[in-house]
Image (cartoon, rainbow, N blue to C red; front, side, top):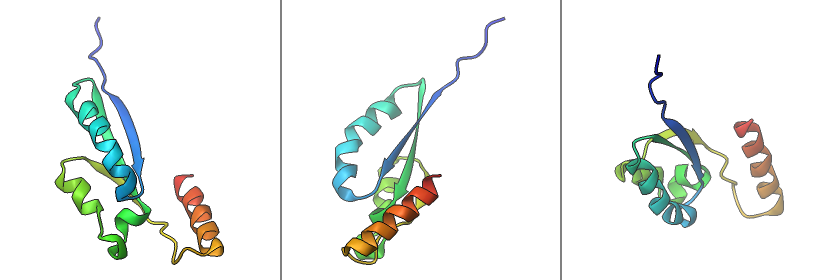
Length: 93
């Protein structure tokens, strides 16, 4: 008995506009292939009103956001960056 072909699920993490623009051609290729299924994890700056809440652009572009992880640092101080890194590790775990 033949089993139906399963889609391969591909997860991608984007944390800001700076990396999102680089990923869109790859996202388009994944979306165009019938055997693949894309799921975007939007994190950090994408969720911050301070940086334009750019998760809305990901959705508007038609990419499926499967998870939102907020670990944007309060500022650029070493302590805030360390805290954000710890929070990110906790959320991804």
